[in-house]
Amino acid sequence: MNPILDQVERAFDFKVYILVAFLVFATLFEVFGRVTNSRVQTKLSRSNTSGDWASKDSYDFIVTLFDRMFAIALYLYPAVDVFVRNANAVYKIYPQYAELLNVTVAPVCDWYITNVWGSFFGYGQGILFFFMYYGIARNRDNMKYFIRYHATQSIMVHGLYIFINQLGDTCFYRNAQPIYGDRFGAQVVWTLGLLLLPMVISAFIGFETKILFWDEAIQYHIGPRPKRKSQGNG
Image 1 (tube, rainbow, N blue to C red):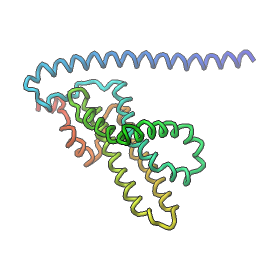
Image 2: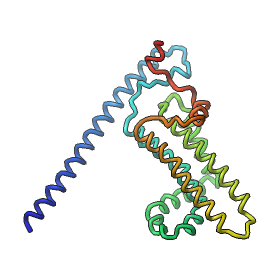
Image 3: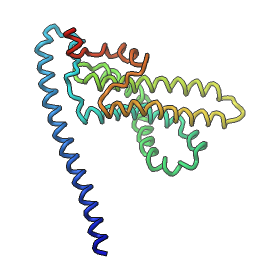
Image 4: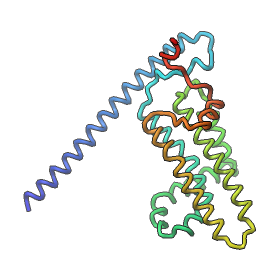
């Protein structure tokens, strides 16, 4: 019995060491990134004497772990909102996942309904939209291009799926077979998940998604992508 317990203890200790090493690395990387970004920001502010809007962006900034987690969290906006709108359809079409959804997703949805939909006399969702668009996506003075890019992308995804939801409601509102509307709502949720997956992965890696045509639309709102040093010299 003792050899088995010793083996379990060694395996547990190894996992603890891995976790501690990761936390130390993450902390050092975050500190290094913030110090470097502070220097880059100071350099850009000194060189941009004219206050040119486009000159405030640079790829010299390091995408810190906080930036990546913040960018990922931005995608909760379309994910939670679209799921809330189609939750009944998902529960009807996939009842086998009801218990899992109640544990993982339902608490977040309840918070969203209470604190977003139900706040500011019913205007909480509109206020959240304007905060994300003007406070993050268009805030070039305080937000990196990376964060603004993913913020705009999450807003565009949300707008696209609101349109799809409204289209589906129009098509299936008077349908004598409600199962078709439920299937449509469930498929909306699944396709949203498939669309958000590469966006979340790119945010975690620290890159922009750069989906064809979609990327150009994002730049229309937040400005052109900053040039790299090799491009600027050429």
